[in-house]
Image (cartoon, rainbow, N blue to C red; front, side):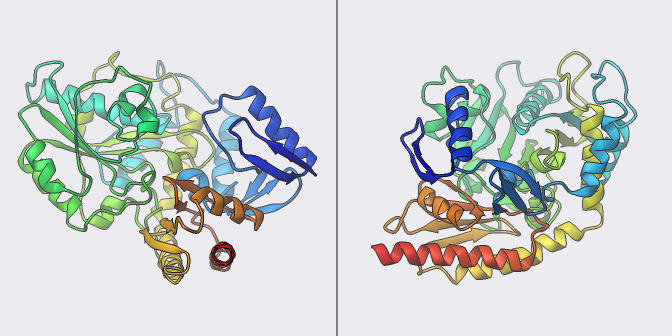
Length: 420
């Protein structure tokens, strides 16, 4: 067993030699833009992963909802394997036989008219911003360079220079200026503030139906319906970033479904690729997405045959409604179990579907410390913003495994309480 300290000053005591060596190699050769927990994953199946020593861990993060359907889902792996033996990339210079069926199935699932495929979530957000600006210029007559997009405080939409330009997180912004203009920030959950911020230059309101990175922040029930009414009345686009909340995570195909609204554009990513390949898309109104002309926007890998094949298999999993139902039922159970811990190490619990944010009493421990203690017990989770932990296990998780994870959390909190 080996005790090592990584480049960030975190000491990892009693790691086995293989794990310590693997972590040391990453620290030596990779940019230090992440601070991973000290586990080296080698394989996965369903809701479980196995590290290089053969120890199994219950994954309660699911790659920030990218692995909604579990590790190695047989239908998704089969779709990828079949396509790998055919063709993986043509670029959009040519048609491919997988892209049309994928776009058609996704549009039908969402009840929308048009799809613009990309690769990563951040690319899709950038694409939605470009479409909104172009629509504002060509349809509303806003002068080029004058368009404004209203965004929310504590938002998280990605890490590109334009996106961090409207972040309110100092860690995301500091040192990365100069910033892209054209964004107006209002408090999340305050529809009146949105209405007050709309001007003749406003082209869109960009919102996470639930803020994930901020700690699974659920807005007031009337927030999204009111936003929909306001944006419709003022001829402003409503863009819903469902990259984390969409595709079954909140017990519906989209969190917007739970709110009873249909935005003008959805931004999708993460789970759309089934945890196998990066797949993202902007989907919605044809009169908005259709403003873009050949040569004005694109991506070499966007809509590639491999991504389209996997994406279509993801849509097929969602078409039956079984994933959404499972997320609702297990999510209700998870939130019930977690709420039993409020006052016993937890200050608050928030969530919808199989997605929860829990606030640990900072007098007991930081979120990082709790996650490290959970790791020792075989549970993988991730902290955010100090003492908040996000739980987003694969939707295929078994109820007994979910209960076991909550039991481990209860034991960890009790152990920290006994030390204080």
